[in-house]
Amino acid sequence: MAVFSLFDAEEKALEQARALRRSLADAPEAVRDGLDTLIGAYDSSVREQRRLVKVSDRLQGQLASLNQELGKRKAEAEEALANLRAAQDSLIQSEKLASLGALVGGVAHEINTPVGVALSCASHLADATDAMRKLFEADDIGIDDFERYMATARDTSALIVGNCERAAALIRSFKQVAVDRTSSERRSFELGSYIRETLASLGPHIRQAGHRVTVDCPDGIVMDSYPGALSQVLSNFVMNSLVHGFDPGTGGAIVITVDRPTSGQVRMIYSDNGKGIAPGNRSRIFDPFFTTRRGAGGSGLGLHIVYNLVTGPLEGGVAVDSPPGGGASFTVTLPQAVSQ
Amino acid sequence: MAMENFKIAATERSPEVNFDFDGCRLSLRGESYPEDASTVFGPLFSALERFLATIGEREFVVEFDLTYFNSSSAKALMNMLKLLDHAARDGARISVSWLFAPDDDTMKEFGEDFSEDLEHVAFNLVAVEPAA
Image (cartoon, rainbow over all chains, first blue to last red; front, top):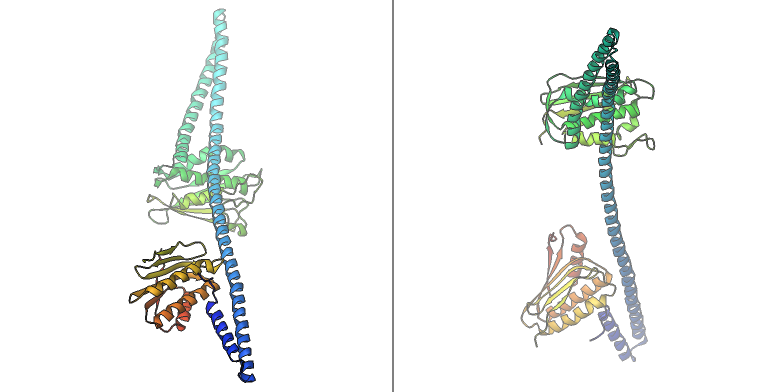
């Protein structure tokens, strides 16, 4: 088999021309010279073509390698992005758990007070009873002793009953909030009381710092939605005010106003009178990991979770505003009944 | 002696070649920018020359379905087309289809450019949606 040559036809033409030139040894000089010039020019043109083909083949090969490299890099970048998204999701999950932890901490603190009071009353009553038993065994009880003991027993038992009732009521309201927060189940609930229950579980955080919360919500708005998500949204707003809005040591005010702009729609305006949000940050405030408190405990996920919950399961919208009078204001618009 | 069919699987840099001698069909599909054009086109040329010598009255259908080729492949393709054109001039019935994606103007222009140098084969430019 002949060796394959891309320029086979050109080589043959050149060979024929050279043979022709040899056969014209006796032709006039002008013909011979002219033919020599033509053959030389064609020969160099074919060599030029070979060079050009080689050069452009090399360029095209490099281009193909670069394209492959580009494809590889793109796949790598896409994988890195997917990993980042997964990491972001898992951070959001742990942030949700952390805020559930804060809720449980608040509940524990809130219940600790009535239980502590009840415990010290019970212990005081036990001591008094023990002292009475000793006097009784010594047959030495005076009228004064008896009257004092009766007063102690009446006061302590009233305090025990009152504080246990308070603890039981707290546990009842926390239980619903905690169940909603962890179960993400859809159910019917009365909006005003649910907002108050959620705020009660955040009570210690708010009261310790000396802040006031006002809820202005018409009675009888029954939602068919996800109370856990709503409770999380509200908690994150409150924690945002406490961490970012209010300077330490200054008592702030939080106002939650609810109305119904159209039938089937609920509008909740959450506002505080804190430092407000710088105009440059307003467009980024719902972005994941955006925080002005990096390194000081801010994860940058609180309001991102708010955004996800409101636009996701709650099927609503959320907007941020910094009113001229100062402070921050969030407007959450929700359907009274979600579609799924 | 019956010739065996000639097939080359596509590689990353060379097209799939399917030469069905009995069915009188030849097709090239894919991309062509091999390191060395002679490894791909050398055997194909030999097979084509042997086949054209035996073609007789049968109609030979050749299909080019290429999405990319380099300069030496372009030269090799032109050489192939010239070989076919000479065979057609000598009486063989040959039809060539040049396939291109509707949005690939470059490949369409290459087809038009090649066809200008051909006089005897039936040359068809065919716009084909690429298989998904």
